[in-house]
Image (tube, rainbow, N blue to C red; front, side, top):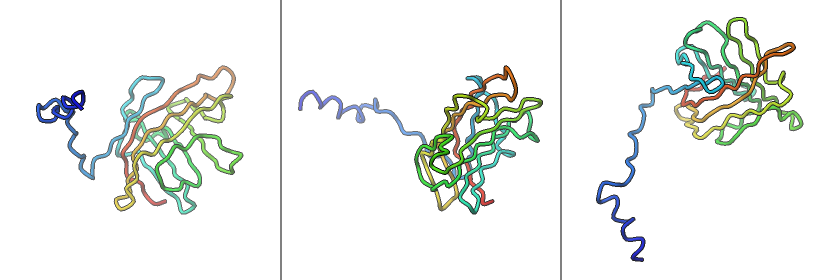
Length: 162
């Protein structure tokens, strides 16, 4: 018991880690990294949609191209709960895919021979229609010798009905 006593006193001494204040409900958090380099995301043009067929579509638009298509990730049959949803689970009858368009670059997850990718939902607020989590995917440019891009980021974002 004596070994644990100093640990119990840490909060009294101010050494305990402090919790961050909660974010306001209106705060939109959306990050994007391409091959490890941060790219500013446009939180006004980006949209998350949930269709009547329960397909979740994440559309993440770059701030330097607000009218562009950016990154689109589709998860069919999304059960609206926390979990990790991996790409290309075709055998289970689910279509999970990613595509990216920026300028003349068009890349798709299904163009890659190895297609690791997932969306991890860490929080669902059904009352306020928000999702929180992270995403990571690889997409490959179409055609011979196309570049492989790794896109990843985090989000706390509202979901709209489609």
